[in-house]
Structure formats: C-alpha cells, structure tokens
Length: 433
Image 1 (cartoon, one colour):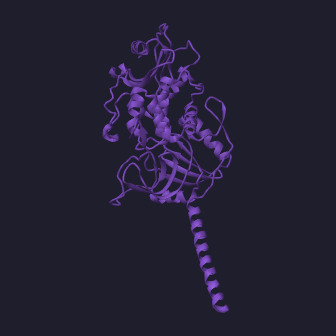
Image 2 (cartoon, one colour; image 1 turned 90 degrees about the vertical axis):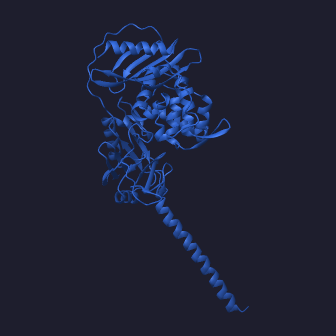
Image 3 (cartoon, helix red, strand yellow; image 1 turned 180 degrees about the vertical axis):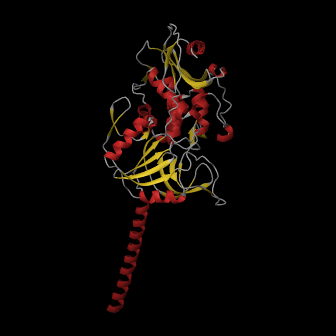
C-alpha cells in the first residue's frame, strides 16, 4: 500500500471517529437539556404555627394547609430569592418564581379528588425528573410535558387516550396537577430538575360552633376526644406521659406506602405476589405485622424507617419516638387521615369503593371491630399493647344541631378500649349540642 493510500485511509478513519464523537456529544447535549442534573439545596428555616424555628423540609406537610403558615413559607422562599413552583389548589393557580419573582402564572385545570387515593397533599416537594411524554400506570392515557414531584404526583398537560388519541373528559386527575398543553409546555421548558414545588390547599372548614358542656369524671386510661375541624377538646386525661405506638403503626405504614408506592405495585408476601391495594386489607383489618414488613420491604429498611420518621414529623407528632406516643400525637394522626387520606379510614371500616379500586383476594376478611356497628363510625383502629392493655383511635361523624362534625376519640392503656370509646361517645352525644 502506497503512502498516499495509507494517508487517505487514516484520514477517513479520523473523520469517522470525529463524526461518531460529534453525534454522541450532540445527543448528550440534548438529553441533558431535557434532563438537567440540577439539585437545589436551600438552607432555610421556617417559623411553624407553634412559633418554632424548623429547617425547610421536603414531603407532605399538613401545616401548609394553614393559610398563615403557607404565606410565611412562600414569603421565606421569595425573600431568599429561590426559584420555585407554587401550586395553589384553592385558587387553582400555578406560578413559577425565578429569584423570588413570578415569571409565569397559569391556570390549574384539574386536581386529585378530595378523599380519594389520588388527593394531592399539601407540602413542599422537588421536581424529580422531566418526561416529554408519559404513559400512566393507572389507566391507558398519555400525558405531555411531565414534571413528577412526589411519588405518583405530576405536573403535566391534558391526557389523551393511548388507543384513540382523544382527550380524556374526567374533571378530576389521578392526583396530578393538570394544566393546558400550552401552559404545561411553557412551565416544562422553564423549570429544572430539583426545583422546589410548594403545594397548598386551604383545608380549613372551621365553621363556628358553640358547645355546651357538662363534663363528667372519667377514671379509665389516657384519652382525648376532640373536634377534627376546629380542635375543640371535649375531654382529655393523661395518666401516663407516653404509650405504646404499636397498635397505631398500621396506619403509619399505610400512609407511607400509599405516598411512595403505586397502588398496583406487586409485592411478594407469604409465598405469593399481591398488589399494595390487596395487602392493605390484612394490614388495616388484622393489624398484621408480617404484612406491614412485606409492604415496606420494596422500599428497603433504611429508607422505610427514614420515610416513617419524616411522616411522623410532618404530621406534627412531635412526641412520638422510640416506639412511644401520646394521645395528642394520635389525634394529629387522626386529623391527617381524615382530612388528607380518608380512603385509609375506609379500609379500616371496610367501606372502600371496590367499584373504583377493584376486588381483592383479601376483601373477604371480616371487620371484627365492634365500633363498625355505630352508624356514625368513620374508621379507626384498635390493638393490644405489650403489657396486655388496649389502645385505639376512632373517628365518628356526629350530628350537633344541624351540623355533622368529625370527632376523634383516642384511648391508650385501657383495660377495655371499646368500652371506653363507646362511653365517651355516649357522653358526647348526650352532653353536647
């Protein structure tokens, strides 16, 4: 081979290498534009409604349903010139801030239905990724301009049926924040991965109500009975500072699992594969500790423990730690369940809508909770403590004059939790109007 032939051949090889390299570099550039690896880490502290200074935390945050606290969090983000998304589900407006200034303000068209599995919780989240097009895991629909920010929750455009390409007609989303396609595209192109997402919905239903009390003397256990809408305390007694959290742990397990796992997630349990939906029946109707372990196993022990600790903190259960709790903290748990995750209470009372969620091999498990026979019973849980005493929480929707009010009754360290709860219920119905 002549020198000239070798030279031409080497030149061709170099050009091939150059073209391949250029193609890879171009592909990486455009991929990176669609998936920017930006991670915000703002070192901010927030003043809670109780006046405490707490670091900015991410996740569902019930305090953010308080208008004053929500305003203080938003002000802190603005004052610190943070780039963030504000999704106000009360005004149905979504705003994007750059360095504390609004640069985009659009209409939220639909949101998750209140009381459903897909209700979008108030909180502070982060944009986890960006997908130009996404096929839903819940139904055969595609969505454009997707910004996932918490578990199954996305910001995206209007869905279309995968088979026909026709827009869906539902007035509620599967928990996502739905925008018009044009607005979703505009927000998608502005926002980077890691951008904080502040979600707010004013859940206050504090309708004024005057109670007339004739408080009796009760001597059994530690207990608390209060209105879940305005926190009016009817009765409270503590004979112990802390109590065993074990009877209430299935509720926390269900909260964490449904926040961070798909309802149709396959989980291996007792030699078979079931969905998360299936396993909620034995978890909440039988308080099965083995089922709880199986449900959390896909998250990993360390992450599951971390998520449960974060959930306890975000709910406001400030004294629950080391497997111990207080009646006040269980009241906070009951309030969160009733206002944000009422479908979990429906499982505990076997009133889950199987027409929506489907049948389950465990749906035949009987509801052995005697409180189910009370027409006003909404849901709750009962269980044994390690010392043989009983604890439980029950939520009732009780008519006072012309209003139906949600009342939580918490009993711990009782010799007969059902008797204590029903005695308190009888007292409330007879003594208040």
